[in-house]
Amino acid sequence: MDQPALFDDPEPVGIQWLPRRQAALARLEQFLPLAGAHYARRRNYDLGPEDRSNISCLSPWIRHRTLLEQEVLVHTLARFGASTAERFVQEVFWRGYFKGWLEHRPGVWQYFCQELENAQRRCEQDSTLYHRYQAAITGSTGIDCLDSWSRELVKTNYLHNHARMWFASIWIFTLKLPWQLGAGFFLQHLLDGDPAANTLSWRWVGGLHTKGKAYGARADNIERFTAGRFNPHSQLAPVASPLVEDDEHPLLALPAQARWTASNRYGLLLTEEDTQSESLELPTSPAALAVLPPAKKFGPVAVASPVLTFRKALLTDASRRAQNHFDHPPLSLPNRDPKSLLGWARDENLDAIALSLPPVGPTRDWLVAARNELSAAGIGCHTVLRRYDALLWPHTTAGFFKLRKKNPEHRPVYGVSVSRNFAALDR
Image (cartoon, rainbow, N blue to C red):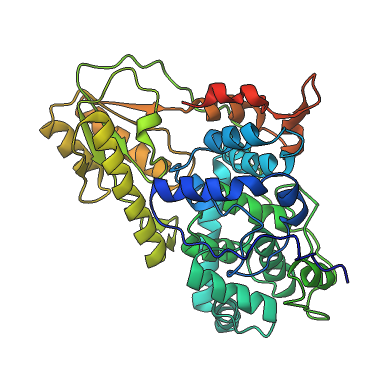
């Protein structure tokens, strides 16, 4: 068995995700020396929660844009050539790809939420399904690797990406549970739980994202890439037959971004989707700041308490930075009722409200109702699209590797150049 060579590895690192930008920057600096050949060679190994030295573990901060994708790319490419860091750069772009793909097909998110509700109802009505589902989420199926990952997810709110793929495959093809319940379990507990990346990753494993091509977990692969911690020999389904669905999800044009000329008085709203307001491109400085509480539910799934606490603390940190940058104390809205937003706008005598464009998901769903409430009161609502998204999303209509091209210097590009000139996107 080809086990990893441990002698040239750094000391084991267990990660604590502190909900502050400074913590994200510190982890980025700590990981950067390993983002080249070491990451390419070792990234697929899940060595357990006590040792994350081989992966970046930046996703909980990137998910909420406490740390921006372009910041990670700029710092990485200042240290390594694009070809040396290609594997890590590719992983950064996967998140943007999934977000852009779902922007083109927002119906996939709505369909997932509906099917998850249906699966939850079936659990309530079918005691056999309910007990099988409970065994999976409590780590009592008898499949050691999956049981360990279930307990790890609930305890640490994180899983290695390779473990997520194995977990989803075993859930779908060995346990034969509805994939939507598994995706909901992840959304409930992951610090980096993201509607696009999570939904589409589960669909990819099941053979729905790349139609007809499913991902089958193998015991030898799990044994190798967990360094022998697990070996589910004879416990896994030998065949992963791709799932099928009747619904088609048409490709739609990206949401139009109207030109925005700042009104005399506008307020900036901070949300969990983008907690770095100080780097947004705004026409003028806002007259007031407010903070939208994080969503307690993602679709029909209640967010676990540690995840909600993490997101609240990220927003608190974002509020401090926003106050220092804009010289306004942010108001924390009492709830997500659009009437609370309207009350703040009236109290501050605002002509309009602006916020970073939330991607498809609960906050985008909330924004539809909020816009209607504001519009009825004669108050405008403007969304700010980051340049990174504006450049990347038009190239995400098909598969990820159609996004990947080669520039004249034979460096990998993903809709935009990731050469050292990529720094132009920073800010």
